[in-house]
Length: 122
Image (cartoon, rainbow, N blue to C red; front, side, top):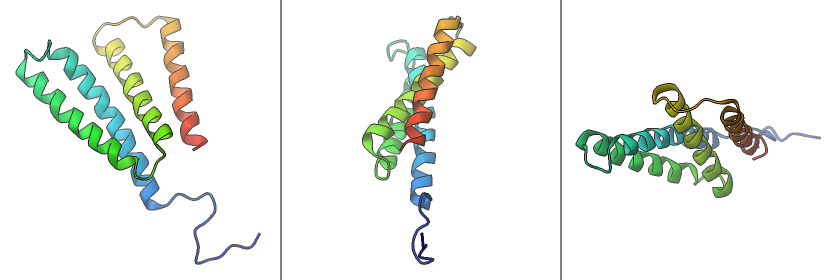
């Protein structure tokens, strides 16, 4: 195999691809923030959690939209949801007193494995 030094390296990520994945991860973490803020807003009756929800929701969606310019929608959306779901469950377990039984933790590990698989086989 002869490589063209002026062309891209096979299998290498370009700068836009790396940035898209970074933005996608941050957007997934913001999904966790808005989900927790939504819970804390008590049906939008508490102003501060409601404002946090609105801001983090918009930022999360904007980041997802940006990332999907480089990442296929099936992969990007699934990774975004996975990060948000695992993050929200982790906050629930670590900070909100939700159950941390073995089947629940194993299920979260399966979600993580799926997200990693989507990235690896992208």
